[in-house]
Length: 519
Image 1 (cartoon, one colour):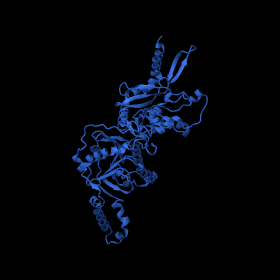
Image 2 (spheres, rainbow, N blue to C red):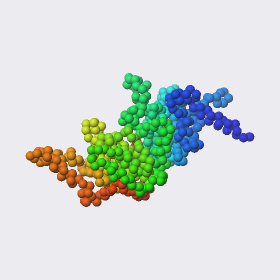
Image 3 (cartoon, rainbow, N blue to C red):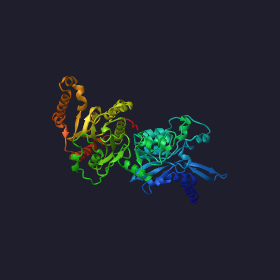
């Protein structure tokens, strides 16, 4: 006698689970302009590669004979899939099932969750978040309330960050614990027009603070992308664009901290020298330039993946490839606050350094650093503490570091472009200038008495400034220090050599980082 009846039951239950929250719930999802959880899995995965686990989780209703009469699946779909041929673990909230909120089903004898599976199997983990978090209806189901206890799920989410790449995509209205999961990631994104993120939604705000607000006003893209919250890195134009971003980001990282990041040659000659780099930085220092264009000229063609472009705009950060090897890249952006490093910029750099230290990437920095951001607003944002955090992060980093000084390098912020230990290299362009402070701002402070006692104080100040500027030639520094000044066109070949040499250092760093990753 065969087991065909039981196999038929497997098929039936899978069909019921595929029905998600039912026709009404699916219709609401579509009216909001969102894909269903099953469509999202199909859109993200390499064709035919999705393998679901915990697929029978849910709540069944049975008749007197013990036969299943109806079934409501879990509010989460979990499984493995391949992205560009590489295996990952994925979990996705199903908003059609109770708004994706948590429910019953926890307890002993549970099969391991997606986050724990990713950790045990050393695979990248992707969350597609579309969930409202906890629901008070759960209290009725379990017949009690409970004390918040920092549950095992949260502990797994934090430990995971020091072991495998984690990506969170905000695909709808996300609140509660899923909102925290959105930020317990190495990279996160939201989708324009359909995504919001907050610890508690408009009803909670109304109950606690007494005012009305919409989901978009509370936690939409104007808050998290363009408003400076810094809680979300990138904005996708559509769900398909979000899937492409996830694939691209993970393509630069290894499956886990125990492996090297994959090399991917794209046929761009590492010895290429772009002629226009000779004019990339204007002689007139008051004229800004496009640092992204410089970055794209040095890295492999089309490989630059920018992270958090609308946050901390005076610093450009991202991932790229040089001679096929993944690297982290950053650069001061003179088009924003003169390229000065403020608290947001420092935060971006700290996160990038943590990513490098965790997943064994070298960092290439295009430095044009006028110093830490000055002024009252910067003080109100705590620039000194932010600067101290950046200094500490640079000192603690072990990533091989190459600095290309294309412009200014001043003050303590300029010192944050240098590594005192580990593999470090620095090249400077002829356009570079540096010092402990700017000559224009420091002349009067240092020579006040001589200037004030002169017959023509303004002329004397100009004369002293001219004398000091003559001493600021990079060639004078090179005479004393041995600093290498290079033709800007040689930047890519030299960077390629540095990245190739760094691979031996990086292989010795395989394994978890010395300090836990902090998002």
